[in-house]
Image (cartoon, rainbow, N blue to C red; front, side):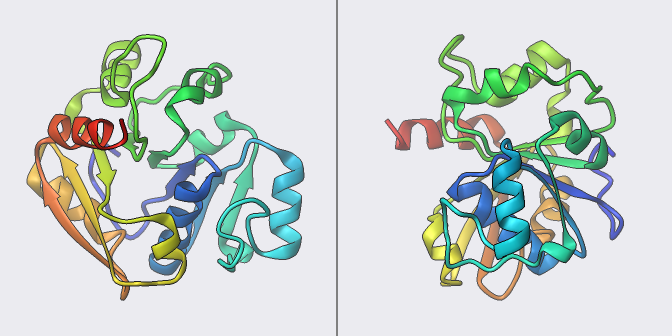
Length: 200
């Protein structure tokens, strides 16, 4: 993968909270199919049956015919080309522990608003240090936007940064829709840490 986005690229969202649900909604509006890691099988069954998240953004109807869900993180990572991590930083390490598949050839995107508490490092620093993912193969997604605004399809803005501008442009295309505008940049450290400071 490594930033070679095309119409066959598969996007996987890892996390099932309000921000993750909002990103899944956006991607369902721009992509043919979305892969989604939901940690609880009961929650998956509920979403399949009722077409919405039982706990977050309940008004958002999800087209489950184009949504591939699993509580097996290895299955999700294997199926996705672009992995969008949207797990609360407090639980990030525990959610990653079951992962055994390789992240080679995956493009890593963090939409996580915080540092890893066990080590006080950012998510991109974790992937660089622990999994040897080069910064060229990573991106950061942040606001200014709230999940509730996405749910209501209010015109909102996403900031998207990658080390290379052309990669950021391609990633941004995946999120553009009638209610989402994007701004791009190349300072992944700056965006990641500005989000951390904003949430202190």
